[in-house]
Length: 232
Image (cartoon, rainbow, N blue to C red; front, top):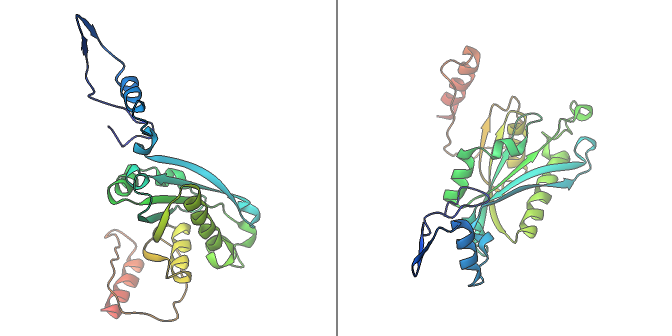
C-alpha cells in the first residue's frame, strides 16, 4: 500500500486469480477493498488525511481564518499516543496549504509522526503600524492559533503534546513572538528571514543553529558575525 497519497492505491494483490479453468484479471483496488471489507476493516485509517478548515477570529481581515492540516496514517492509527505538531507559517499573505503541501514537510511528518498545521494569515493593513496585525500574536493571532489547535485536536481526536514551529518572513515574526509568548507550548522554532524581532527581557544560555548565505549583504554578515562573537 502506497501511504504517500491521500486516496491510496493498492498494489501487488495478485494480477490474476485462478478459479478452476477460468482466469480472471480483477481490478486490484476494488478487489482489495471488498476483501478487507469482509473483515469489517476501516480502510480509511490506513490513509494520510489532509484538508482545510476555517476558524472565526475578531480581526477584520481574517474573520474566517483558513488553516490547512495534514495527519499521516502513522498518527491516525495511534490516536491515543501524544503527538507533536509542526506549525508552518508562510510569508506575508502566503498560502499555508501551499507551504505545507511540499513533499519535504509531508515526508518528515509521515516519518516522524507529526501533525502539520499551517494557517493562512491575511495582511492587516489598518493595524500594521500599531502592532496589532497578525505578526503580533499578543493582539489576536496567538489565541487564534491556540483555538485552531484545540479545534483540530477535538475534531480528529488527537492528543497534541507540543509544538515545533517554522516561519517565513512575516510568518517568522509571528513564530518568534509566539514562541516567546507561549514558551511552555513550543519545543523548538525555526526563524527564516523575519525582518523584525522583539527584545527579549532575559536570556538563558543555550546552543542553537543559525546560518547566513555567503553571498548575502555584507552588512547582514557583519551583524551575524558580531552576534556570534558576543554569544560565544
